[in-house]
Image 1 (cartoon, one colour):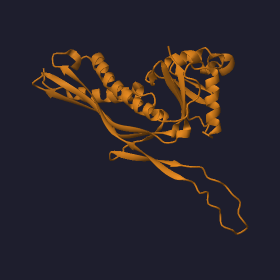
Image 2 (tube, one colour; image 1 turned 60 degrees about the horizontal axis):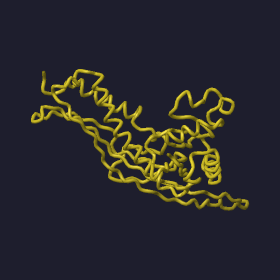
Image 3 (cartoon, rainbow, N blue to C red; image 1 turned 135 degrees about the vertical axis):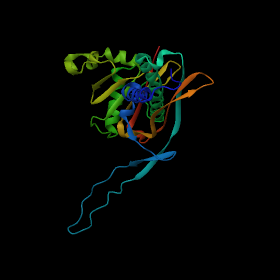
Image 4 (cartoon, one colour; image 1 turned 45 degrees about the vertical axis):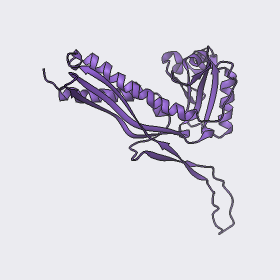
Amino acid sequence: MSTSIDQAFVKQFEREVHAAYQRQGSKLRPTVRTKNNVRGSTTVFQKVGRGTAATKARHGMVPVMNVEHSHVEAVLVDYYAGEWVDRLDELKTNIDERQVLAAAGAYALGRKTDELIINALAQARTSIGAANEGLTKQKVLAAFEHLGAKDVPDDGQRFAVVGWKQWSELLALPEFASADYVGDDVLPWRGAQAKMWLGTLWIAHSGLPLRDGMRTCFWYHRSAVGHAVGQDVVTDITWHGDRAAHFVACWMSQGAVLIDDEGVVKIPCREM
């Protein structure tokens, strides 16, 4: 047997890692502003304030909106995930086992991507509802009203991320789970990971902050959080004779930052 993995295997393995990362590795990456191919250790996301319209006199100058321009900076950090593969393992010729290892690396990087985004969301200052109760209809409506009062666009780009306990609590609400309210085509029973409700895509996630029995959930607009990618998922496989094994390494360089505090609402929920 060759002392190096066949190049066809290497290329296939790299494709599988990338595909697994895109398919199931990160749930939240598609829900935020993403800037790809960043060069350098930092990048900025632009934030534009509100403009004001006014009248003008005949032949007069068009009034300036005086829009406030600012920016926030995202710092990129390098992350790695690796695993040893003994030469005597059948991994190199067993496609099922190869896919398992590829998925493991991709999922590890995907969880880190979501962790970066969640940490950025956690910087928001607005919190709706009492922390000593679960996710209730009253909390949902209060957060809904807050976003509307802040003129957060209701353009199909709102997202709500809740824990699995809170997802179960939502299923107890007829307005969320009953076909009489939402129609048969968007029932949560058809797919337990995401559902449209109140013009928002609701997503169940296991990685939300949990402290002292209190889970922090988030409701936000896509433009409120920025995700920067300096290097997308890359895979390398090298032979180490002293270990009689191959080392499979995956890495990426990413960062996330809160852009608009008014576009994010935190919903604390009691979780026992």
